[in-house]
Length: 194
Image (cartoon, rainbow, N blue to C red; front, top):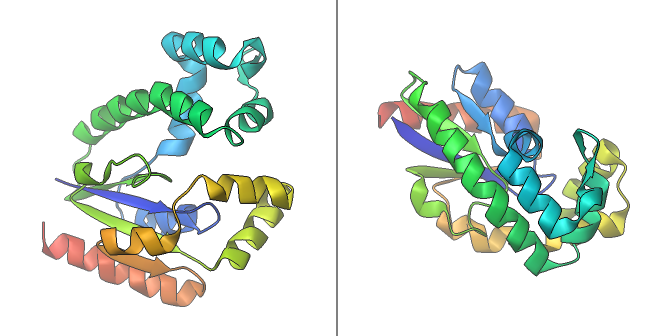
């Protein structure tokens, strides 16, 4: 079974692309969603995150996401430490999930594959791109986050120009009809090569 990484900067439309692959029958694992769940459900993660960020990291049984974002997106070292707690748990969860799949390939949707030097883990990598202003507009509409906060988060991710040469497939996600056709082409290629 092939393991395919699906990545792209914030607002590029990874979730839209993931949904298109799901519609074609491909099992897709969403790393961000799983990470949020593990940060709450794993006693080890809760303990380490509380030690790292303080008691305010949790509000009762819930993750205090705005507090955590405020702490880590301004501090690259803190973000690295948080990722060091969460990413191994996600990797273990993903591998367990993968063993239960019966499809010729699976997709792991993950925002920072290259930034974490994880590209060698994947058989193929699909990069989703979109112009910066389009991405900003999407995030503003989706989250209502202030522009400067979005730019801060973007600053923690590599630019597309650095990720494109390292990717096997690139989807420019501006026109949904063209995007859907590109997803189908990639899907067919991945099935042919399995």
